[in-house]
Length: 315
Image (cartoon, rainbow, N blue to C red; front, top):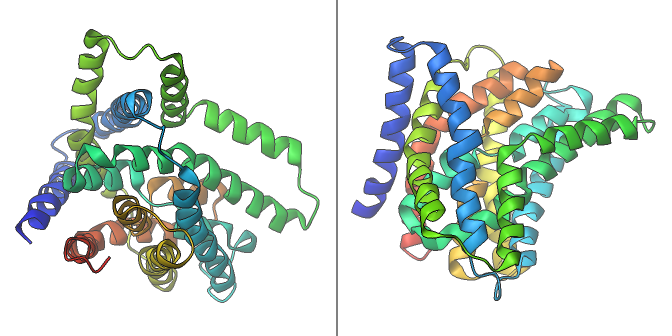
């Protein structure tokens, strides 16, 4: 239990600290925006590039890990689309925004720091395997879901493809993972100077990500759409990890560490990308915004319980 508190309390302590600084306006919004850009475009990509470029993939088969995680996500996605039809605050474009919110977890700024803090660098391989395809798959699925629902079988596939390629080409995390994989294929390794530089940036990724996450939460509102918020949190933080847990035990057998990471990542609260999708399309934005804010606060309790069950051997 002490190890869990030593993992969870510092993580959420930095989130609270970031929120407090933003709420008290100790620094301005431009500073927090710059910090978030540093996290997404430099620090976390440096961590993922270093991990991907140096990890041993000889005995790694990603198919079961992807099958368990994205299989659980698919079940949750379908459930969210069905439930959204019955809730006015979520019933837009076939429930695309609701499905995105129920599936897109905060893996980069919360899941990764939690996993690394509790399990150590050994979790880097399965972490990279999931993150390498997480954003592309979900952005593609959400965009297709929305377009198909809006155009009833006659979507503009060329426009969708152009939008996805443009979005992914600007995603620093996707670029870092691809670059790391390509560099690993060269067999050159990393010289100690760039290796040290990447390590310094990687070391900065966890605290800055958590502080920036806390600061960003001050901009999310809990007002309105409480029914939609409650449903999204239930789908994202209960149904999704439960489905992944079942799949890892019954369908896609995994090493214990891989299974634990898959369940932990599935249990993460809704991430900012889901809110950006809802806000950009002006569909279910209040409910998604509330699920990001409330879900992140609730995760302090749910993550502690989940890690305890993992350490006790129940998961």
